[in-house]
Amino acid sequence: MFKIDIDKDIHIEMLHISHAQALFDLTNKNRETLQEWLPWVGHTTKIEDTQEFIRHSLTQYVKNGSIDAPVFYKGKLVGMIALLISKRYNLKRADIGYWLDSEHQGKGIISKCAQKMLEIGFEKYNLRKITIHCATDNSNSCNVAKRLGFHLDGTLRQEAKVGEKIEDLNVFSITQNEYKEIK
Image 1: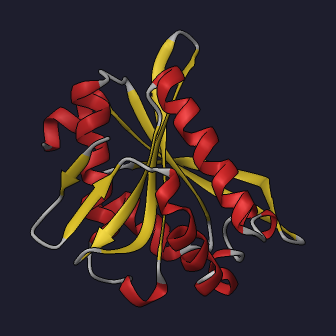
Image 2 (image 1 turned 135 degrees about the vertical axis):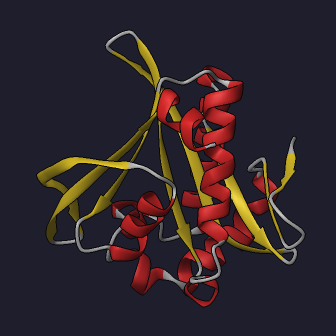
C-alpha cells in the first residue's frame, strides 16, 4: 500500500476496500454533479458497487500497473484520480481520469495530483503518451489538461453516453518528450 504526499495538504494513496464507505458516500454527495459527466455514476447505487470497483481496480493494478487513487485534502477523502495503463499499437500509454468533491474544486487539487500521475507515468512506467478525455462542455476538466501542458488532439463526436445524453469528448495528450521539455 502506498501513500504519496503531493504537498502539505494533499496526498493520494492506494485504493483499499477500507475506502469503500467514504468513497460511496462522497459519490452520493456529488451524484447530481458527477452524473452530468461520468457514465459510471448511474450504475453506482449501493455500497457493493463501490466495493466491486475497488476489487476490479486492485486487479488492474496487479495486472498492468493501473492506479486508482483516492485524493485526500487535509486528511479527508475528496475525490479520485486514475492512471489507466494500456498498450495500443505496440506503445505503452495511459489515460488519466479524475473527479473531485464540488466543495473542493478550484484549489488546484486535481491539477497537482494529475501532475504527480504524469511523473509516475513517464518516469516510473516509461509511458510514451498520456491522454485525458473529457466532455467538450466540461470546462473545468478541459482546463486541467490545458494547465498541465496537454495538446488538444481533437474531438470525438458522439463518443460517450452519459445518462440520456450523447457527449462529444475532447482528447488531450502529452508525450514523454513533451513532458521532459516542460518538466
